[in-house]
Image (tube, one colour):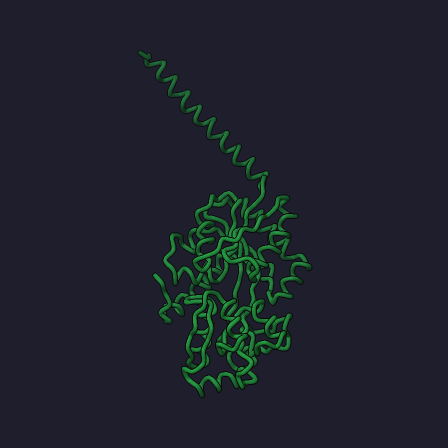
Amino acid sequence: MATKRQRVRSLAFGIGGAAVLAAMAASDGLAAGQVYPGRPVTLLVPFPAGGAIDTLGRILAERMRGSLGQPVIVENVTGGSGSIGTGRVARARGDGYTLGLGALATHVVNGAVLKLEYDVRSDFEPVSLLAMQPLLIVGKKQIPAKDLKELIAWLKANPDKASFGTGGPGSVTHLAGVLFQTESGTRFGFVPYRGAVAAMQDLVAGQIDIMIDQAPNALPQVRAGAIKAYAITAGSRLAAAPDIPTVDEQGLPGVHISIWQALFAPKGTPKTIIAKLNAAVMDALADPAMRGRLADLGQYVFPRDQQTPEALDAFHEAEIAKWWPIIKAAGISTK
């Protein structure tokens, strides 16, 4: 049987050993933080390859590699309006090796429309705002209206007769239509599709009348003369399409809608890693070649003072405050 003195010594050694182990763990953690990243980083894009968000993700990944010294591998995890891939980011370890490309749809709309197993606000660490693109109000070639004012007049003269294509219930294209209908005082029927690409195909074919879609998707069809462009949903014209007027210029300033992209990390990712990722993003977005490629796609890079984690956090909160009441008032939900 151990004596009282032996028991005291054992306890003291246990406490001391625990302290040593704790110090070693802290030292290991510090070392890991200093060498981050020590292996390739995965960037999850929650939408199919080839789309506007995927293209941005691949351009960003290519540029971040130089700053991080490790490859950034893009992985497309699709489904659930972007909630499948975003959910994987939420469940990933906060070690900086799994990142997620987020957008208005994934980190605002889905939180109001879908029943999620994660929280769009509290289960992520903001890294940086990236880019944004306004939408285009477009119509099939057969519509007689020549500009936005004439389009609104035509819709008012034919209430509930025109068809508006969307990427599905609760999609950004759907919300854009709801906002446009409210602000313009028009009425039309919504036609949901499994994605905006399918809706655009039917618009080109003349099967539906109008839609509001992101510039990278709509501009090629406008340039080809397959559809008509009526307005940009922003206060300034697109550098990639300076001939298309804004909604402000045509008397409809309330319809400002932009699809934005941002970089998020899982909750609990250390601040030192967030800072390193943010610096890599800022370096990438400052590259004139990258900015030029994004401009050609109709995307604006956020100003440098809006590329901080704090700016993304405030922006994210403001977007939720703006859109959730609109979604609720429209009765859009699958919960």
